[in-house]
Image (cartoon, rainbow, N blue to C red; front, top):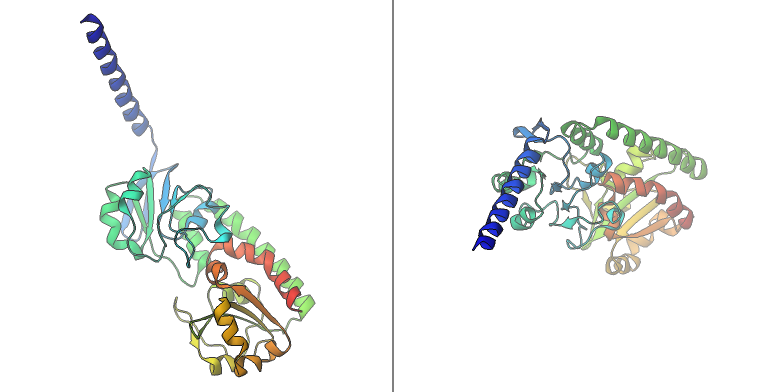
Length: 310
């Protein structure tokens, strides 16, 4: 009997100590108040367990965080990472795709996050997620990737890390720009588009095209359709023929590539006749230009791609 009472007392003592320890750990956590699109949110200053559903896990890595849950999955297979983020997001659990408006709430809860990041796309999940952990909602800028970095940096109070990364990126881009212009001519024009389902989605001012025209300062060909929002301009074969490009970055599937190669309009394009076409798989290159880490890796690849097409 004495032994049983002693054991019970020890268990109660351990439970009490554990409870006190948990309370102390919580009370010792320094909190900061940040602003998101809904107002003010109180989060831990040094968040350790971040779940990101907004599609900005790569930006969080730039700021020095390693997410434990992410929706930065491959656009063609939500169960895996795009190749350009495999190393960056290694170890994180994939919870869905960032353009989905709902994901598995229970899976998020099981990760025991101390902060959750979502975009306005997942607004319908907001109330449920706030019951799990402080939830930050952001508005992604579809045509201004640098603004997304600055905004995230301001929220997490890590503007120095953002500025350092952006400065390094711009230096790499300037060096590559000069190299390409010296080798291929400063007036040479470049086109990138996705060929899918018999349509051509032109990267005019976003994604891969944004890397070419804004980051590298390369020439945009005449006849390019304009882009006003996140949706890529779509053209037909005839519309494609009106774009006067010296080099083409063709992003496509094997099936669509075969269709192109048998098409008269395609085969009469000057870039095709001159064998100035760089063919790239739709995964990962359709989405790669939308990711800061993806863009950085494109800088390391583009000149080599052009050399192979020369």
